[in-house]
Length: 266
Image 1 (cartoon, helix red, strand yellow):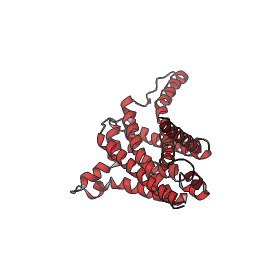
Image 2 (cartoon, helix red, strand yellow):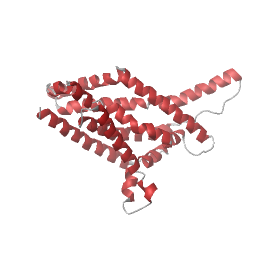
Image 3 (cartoon, one colour):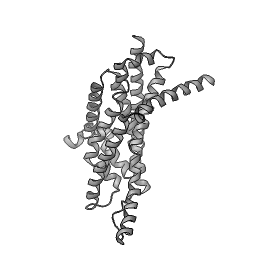
Image 4 (cartoon, helix red, strand yellow):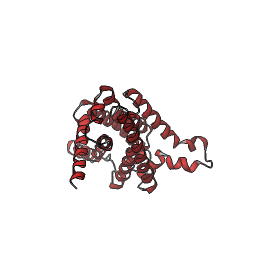
């Protein structure tokens, strides 16, 4: 029991150490600020779309916007490219691998810290209905008229999108960690992760380009856009849960093999 408690205590120390890299340096705050600005641009475009189209929630239009996918793809390389590659370049990874900690603890500490930061990036989305409500109250107080621009934002509008974004993050963060473990260059790690993200995204759109064919169900199953569309409508499906959690565990196992190889060849 004490051994297990010490194992988790060491994991927590490594997790907090990695978390400081994101929140204790300008690196993480710059990514958070850029994400908020880009989400703001996407929301502005969504409001214009919703003024002409009805029937779907704001989150559906927000996550279906091409501008959202443009910066969503680049979030994961930015978060993970320095996790192992930078430590390898600076020589600190060697000291970490020779310390009395297991490879699993090192990987989980970095993975959980990156995943926590990824989840924090989407917290500002919860502020949009509150900000919209305040804007309407100000309009009523300042001009004495009732505004009609409050964003319709119900519980079902954000639960599904947050669920699918969280699920996709489990796998894509693991992929970024694998790319970072394979090289000592942040740039190469970022390029590898970006290439995978773009390939995975367009893999789900193969049927839109080539139409339906015998293997089309596989591509529908892997389609990020279809999964986001379904979850944004409140249609929760267990298949993406199995897909992303299985792929995340498999990818983390590959990361462990890569780090173990480095550990025992030193």
